[in-house]
Picture (cartoon, rainbow, N blue to C red):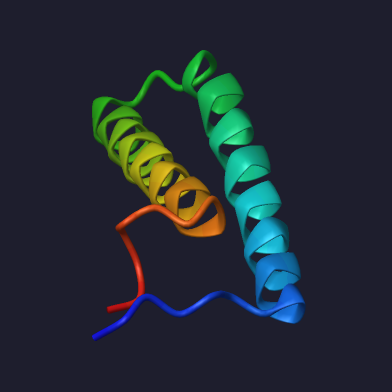
Length: 70
């Protein structure tokens, strides 16, 4: 299947999602320093790792990389 270009409105939506994910990841990183409960810390670390993965995927889609729509 040929690669399709994203519409302007789609790129705007993806940028908004990317911004939200980036802000959330920053908040999780800041909260990590205050957490003393090992289970909560583990959850935050997992969420930060997933957020970073999602951020990379969104950046790849926005720039026209191979990840994403197929």
